[in-house]
Image (cartoon, rainbow, N blue to C red; front, side):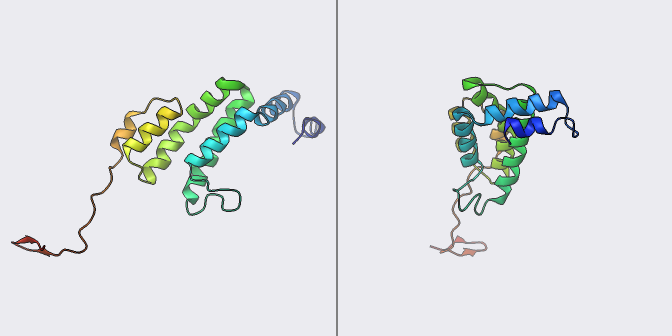
Length: 150
């Protein structure tokens, strides 16, 4: 919505202060920093492009929406710009990313590396994520009392 459209709703159930907050948030959303940070978050949540969206990762869309709701709620109260904006967006998205990574079974090395690239400290939760499973031996058979066949 544009600022004019938001101001047009004042008096029809929308207060002046709420309208001012919404206008500030709309201005923040139109900045390059917001757009680039949002694109980076989409990539982390499994967004695969304009036509495909979240592809075969619909759970990523749920966590992404929760993260963006949290981010936009805070930006309504306190609009930020520049590096402060991207840092705060990453900070607010971190718990949702960690939950998504846990559900999608990302290994702790991936989580730590990604959080460091985002300028965040890895949380202790990432150490509790399961590691990669060892490869299964589909071409061998287990024989009780003798072990694996060769």
